[in-house]
Image (tube, rainbow, N blue to C red):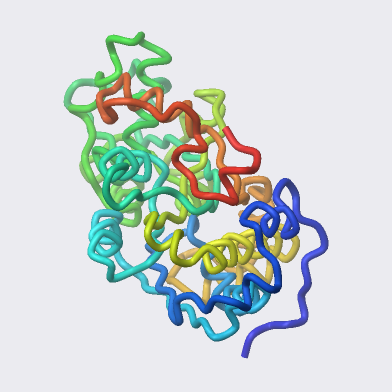
Length: 343
């Protein structure tokens, strides 16, 4: 049974009225055309996808679909491990909407501009990443030796890009790839265990909840948070879709964004209840009190509007990950988010 006791109080930046106006919603036009009967969203496990979990568990997708004239539509949430698998599912048409990292979205946008037209529907979270080490002798990036290893989620993922951005900032433009040879790919749980047990790696770059957990572990120390080191607040998780789905389902696309916006407000305003939903949806070594504390600390991270898109895109061109950056962040997002605030 869905929890209907909570109602949103205030929504920063993008209101439901603005969402409706942005896509030209009216009661008459919404009722005149029945869109897709079932919408499938694929997400990975992890903190970044909490707004999708909240929207699903509270029935917000269905509520917003009804408000947008699509009362008959149902929503299915699939858990798929790894961005490449989600990308494949989106390309094959097995899912309608997929959860990506921002860097993966930029790459997909560049590759599909003249075909599937993969873009972001909305941001989920602008989550920070901490850089942790298990060797007291390492007090800065300059202290890593050539045979040290740094765990990242993927050599082309956002954590790897953050390390490259830090290398450029500290050592110069010709040193972007200075630490590439030190990177090893490990899933976040494995990387966390390897770091605290000193099992083959010296450093690890991780988001919440792993960052929250490691900050409280005396066996490791934090070099820095990347938002501070780079002076950059950057979206990490987004929901993406194809031009075909959005063109054929404008009301449902807007409904999904509205539901995520509502879920973000719930996380900010009801962190303990959101923590309960998080722990019910996936395994975690953190307690309910710890997850609630983490969510209270990062309440400003949740927004459907993106941040840092152009900073990341411009860097990815310098690093060789992209051939050309978009002219504006709006080129990478569908309306209504593209009509709102962002960077």
